[in-house]
Image (tube, rainbow, N blue to C red):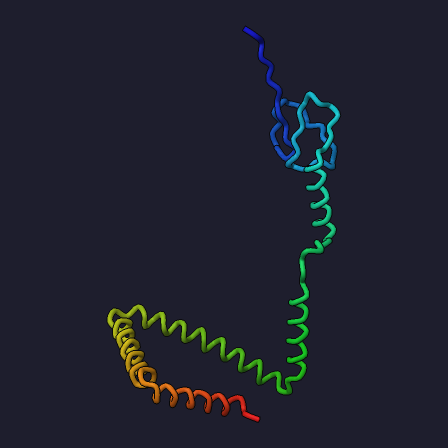
Length: 163
């Protein structure tokens, strides 16, 4: 039979040595680059060079030209301008904190109601019934739809203010 020889494969990121010797790879080699022990002149491939360039770019903090981050600074700038225009910052902050607390409390209340055995089903039936009544009262006939649209436009004008 023919004699078979096996050559060990070493990977630079491996912590165990397969052939019992320390791997002799240049510092520019990346974990994806594989070298064979027969080849003593360890050369990195084009792929490994690209990876090394990408790692250098990430380490130095360079950003690619493809990434566009212009929206975030504009948003932050607009937010800062709006915040600077506010006269009573304490009141606005209090309203925001109170709104967050009210939202948190209402979520807790709804989850507590949802755990009760009969209440969620009854509330669902009430919601379905009210939706049906509203549709019949305001959406089925043309004069009722026109009245509803006039009410919505009037409310919109009151809130926004018509000029």
